[in-house]
Amino acid sequence: MKTRLMFALLVAINALPASAEIVVVTNPANQATRMLPEQVSQFFLGGSTIFTPLDQSKDAAIRKEFYEKVIKKTPAQVEAIWAKASFSGKGTAPKEFPNDAAVKKAVAAEPSALAYIDKASVDSTVKVLLVVP
Image (tube, rainbow, N blue to C red):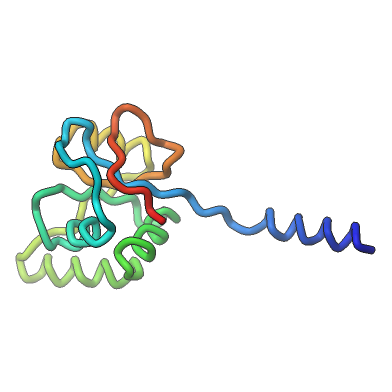
């Protein structure tokens, strides 16, 4: 009986969706060496133009997790903020990319780029500024 219960518990734990370990990255040539979550949030919400934020696609699970953990808002709230900024002429939402590979390619091409990807995707084309807790 204990063995079955233990087995069922292990199966249940392994069935839980695994979340990605998210990192915020920039171009390796960028002089920034680290960043606080509050700073990342400011850039992704249009509070500063020092960096060019790049986003993941709307249907990407990493996007929802990034917004909730770093921006402290839901994707719908972030979209509303950008819609308001766009209609008032105060900014446009970050360009979206379909996956980590496309994000890394864009970051490599833009020295001021700021993006987020799964830590497992990190390579020499990007520099990590923040590991999302």
